Length: 249
Ligand code: 4AZ
Image (tube, rainbow, N blue to C red; front, side, top):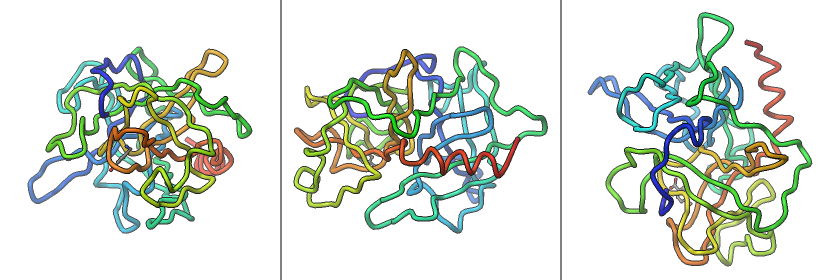
């Protein structure tokens, strides 16, 4: 997160960190953010994964304020299955969504706590007003060329941009599809950045923090009058429900 502030995981208990394992050095590395939406289900961005990757190299960490520090509140899972959206376009990042099923021996995976709690999915037709205040979070970089991901989870404040202003003209010519939404900080401060991909954009709706976007792409981080681009989650409610129904816990 560019700008924003250091946060505690209890402020965004649906935030996940997705790591991948490198056998040669026997270590895990940060890959992307993710969002817990149900006990065994995490959403992320399709562009975080490669079709040939096996889910065995992935690890999902919930409940950590500090990315690389163990905590009594953490819950760590292997991944049983990974679905990348069938129509993900790696050129434009259209349909930039993936869903991960966490592995468990029992019926439940993540157990609700102050530090681990799913975000609400929106109804398929939910449209919030332009400039609605929302929040983003993640362990990503604090600036585009920073060498490291953030150690502490951060939270930033952005507003939903009108569709008319979410165009290639403000994004260095890259196309924007109806499956994307723009959000940015009108003060020109907070934005998502590298390593936040797949993480949450949540907005308050009927007093619930509702997942409206997944961090997808942007032209740099925190540049003046440039929004971040997010996967438009309301377009994938049926896709998400189909994946969950086809693979019950
Ligand atoms: C990235 O490279 C990235 N400012 C993610 C989000 C944004 C920029 C870059 C939005 O993963």
